[in-house]
Length: 349
Image (cartoon, rainbow, N blue to C red):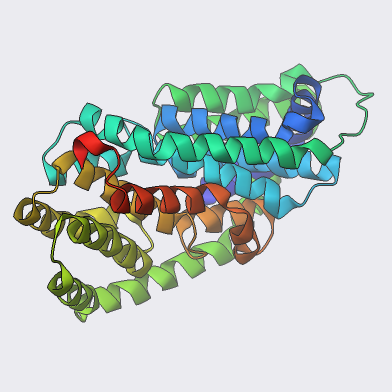
């Protein structure tokens, strides 16, 4: 939270966001802005395996594009958040993928194969929706030349993240780069840079407190047996393989609501999900896929989850205002439900 705020604000004060927005508007036709941002978020998230890192990197750019084009900031932010969950769900290095496959006893590649049948069609549908929605967006004519040197911090952040550098190290590098380039281009002096870093951290203070309070409250629920109560009640209603898959998905989603963390949710219900799957003959690859997609579906929609809180903090909007535009999390929820009810993909169902 602190590093994300520091990088975003120092980059803004240095002019990096404006330069990157100008470059984006220069490269992408107006009608491709929504679809282009969604594709960028999908690509980056599947490369780095973290939705949070993708949101931190792209949200300031999305906000800048929204301001330049007169588009709703909540919509632009939602495009980035939605695309970030594509990689969180599919990436081989995503913690949710690793936990889901390890708890269900299957290979990463097998789970990826099953998952791709479910989420890629959903992503393609949403891509078409964003292309149609973007047809009415008109960017202002850019008369200023792109200041390439000020784009470097974002390029370095994206490239190092894609090559697997830790997100904290990536953000620290980005902060240092904004300082060096800012002083080189006389955007600010060393004290101005330090002030922008401090202001960015202070701006994240409220979100940090909210996150800590939510974490404390949810841990109390867990310690008092709330999550165990949910699990015990739900497993009583399973009668067949379809019911077992629905129960696994519902457990992952409900526990995610209680913990506000999709990885923790999968860890919490992974053992019982394995037992349910074995008892009713659910393919372990399908079980791992259902666990992952359902947890990402819920995580992408709860306003007190880290992803929406960070996105809202960087965009300075209410996280609830983002939810109506989160088409992709809704789509993977519907796609997962259909895959269970229609026994799809057939080979693994």
